Amino acid sequence: MTDSGDIPALPGDITPVWITSVLRGCGVLRQGTVASAQADIIGEERGFTGVIARISLTYDDARAKASP
Image (cartoon, rainbow, N blue to C red; front, side):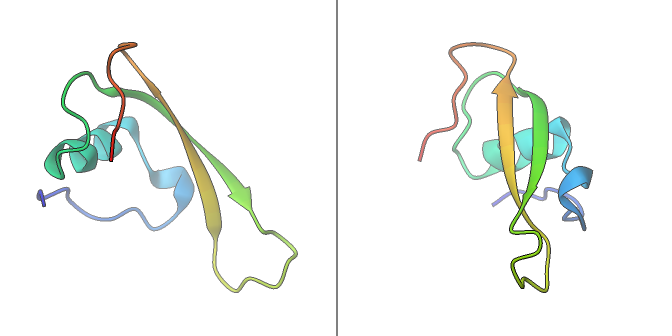
């Protein structure tokens, strides 16, 4: 793992720089960078006590894709 700094408290706090660092640190993103990270809150009004979000990423390079 990498020293990715503080973990964001809220989905909207996830920045492209932070997520690029995390994905590089664990070997998932080998080239390019994350250009944007869009957080969409899901599960509202469904009884969840926390915040659940889907993060949609776009990359600066078509060849840059996070892979498992």
